[in-house]
Structure formats: structure tokens, C-alpha cells
Image (cartoon, rainbow, N blue to C red; front, side, top):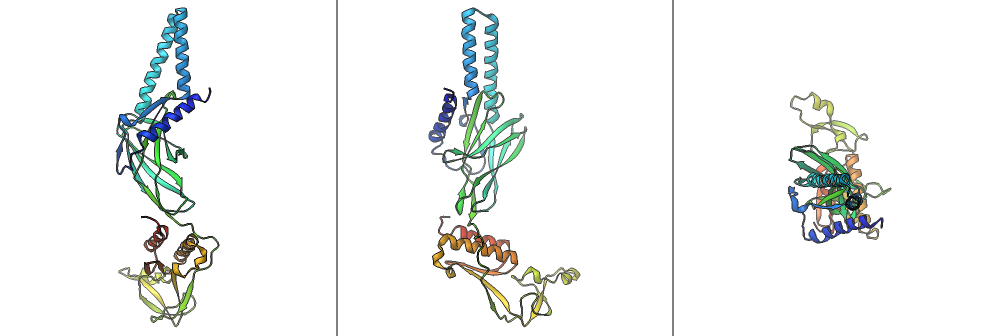
Length: 331
């Protein structure tokens, strides 16, 4: 019997989520919570309170207690006011999605959400939770002052590479008395790109040594030959910072070396052993991309028909990692 209120509340919540929201698609842009989207049921404490009121009312009738009637109606009035405040604490909110950032497999995907309270009263103890396959995630509580936008970040585990769609969100509150619980559902049109998990303790970068016509060599191993204009793909370690600082126009220049061999780096999915498997090869390429960026080495990238010429930088890295994340995945 002690579990009955909890089971009743959970059953009603699951029924509402299954039948009332089963056809609701992802909602793009701002979403408004009208009255018809708010549901409210008694909590375990609320059911106990209702039983207590019933006992008080019956005892007052049986023993003709005027003060008993007064106490019963006073407590019932408080419960009715609490019901209104609980419902108002959640209704008429404006919800909108925020920004997301790509993550690697095994990390927590972060979804930023905005709760806009355009009413002249504050809202307290609003609980937001991701619902994945009927299981609630880690809750987050927030208060929203009057006429203010509150930013909330919810997280969920990124278990597979590709696009991770934001789970459905349940907003609920039992403020102020805890006798009733109001809730609503929201399916934001948000997604996060999940990159493959980098290989741990993998092999070094597949560098090949070759001669270049411009006479550039590997830094620190060749004779300094002079200064030339900066070209796309030049390592930041070869930048002539002293000359750049002295120039009037701030033009970028690079140190040039003579007679050296230069390391060429090409990351090709097709050159990896097929015995490694698809996911293992993607993990190795992911690790190599991160290593090349950390070392400041321009690299070419090939994944099936997708090819990028040698380059370096955040845009080049993001393009390579996105190709790895969406390989043989629906976009």
C-alpha cells in the first residue's frame, strides 16, 4: 500500500507521455506551454493530505465539531490555492533551444536550453530531465525570476558516432507545498554531432619524407635561408614573429630553410588494414587528425570519395572529424 501513490503517479505520467505525445514531432524554434499541455496529479504527500482531510471531515460530522469543520475547510482551501500555484509555476513558459557543441564517443553531449518567463511573477524549483526510452536522466533544477530568461544545460551520454538527437524533455514542479506535481513534455529540434572516439596508444603519424621545389625543410634541422611571404599550410612554428612585429602593415612572413627534406602527411582510410574493422580504422584516423593538429603539421585527408587537400586549422579539423562521424551514417 505504501507504493500505491507512487505507482499511480508514475502510471499516469507514462500514459500521458505514451498516448498524448506519441505523435508529437520535434518542435523547431520557440515553444509555448499553454494550459492544455500542463498535467497535474497529487503526489504521495498530496494523497496522504487528502485522506487526512477526509478523516477530519468525517470526525467533524460525527462529533459535530465546529472547529473541526473550520480546520478542514481551511486546510482544503490551502490545498486549492497550492494547486493553482503549482499549475501557474509551469504554465505559460516560452521554451527555445540554445547552442550545441560536437563531442567524442564516450563524452557527455551538452544541450543548452532557454526558459523565458514573460510573466510578472517568479517561478521556483522547476525540474528538467531528459527522458530516454522511458528512463529519466539526471535532473536539473532552476528558478526563473520574473521577466527573465534562464539558461539550462542538460547532458546525455554520447554512445555512438553520428548525429545524436536530443531526447524528450520533461519539465515538472511541485512548488509550493509539494502536494501536487505538474509536468509537461517538450521535444526540441536539437542534435549534436558525435565524433568517433580517438584510438588510445595508437601508432605514430604516417609521415613520408620527400623533396620540395621551394627548398623548405623540417624546422630545426636545416640551414636558415631567409624570409618569404606566408602560404596556406605553413606551420605556425616557422612564423617569423620578430619580422612580423617590425613590419608596418603586419604582413605574415615565414622562415625558409635550404636543402632540407620535408615531411608529407596524408591520412587515407583506404591505406589502413581492412582487418582492423570500420570503427577501429575511424578511431585511428580520428587520433591522427588530432595529433597532426597538435603538432602543427598540414595533412591531406581521404575517406572514400571524400578528399581534402593538405591544410591545417580548426575548419580543416572539423571537416575531417565530421566526415569520420558521418561515415556510412544517414545525415
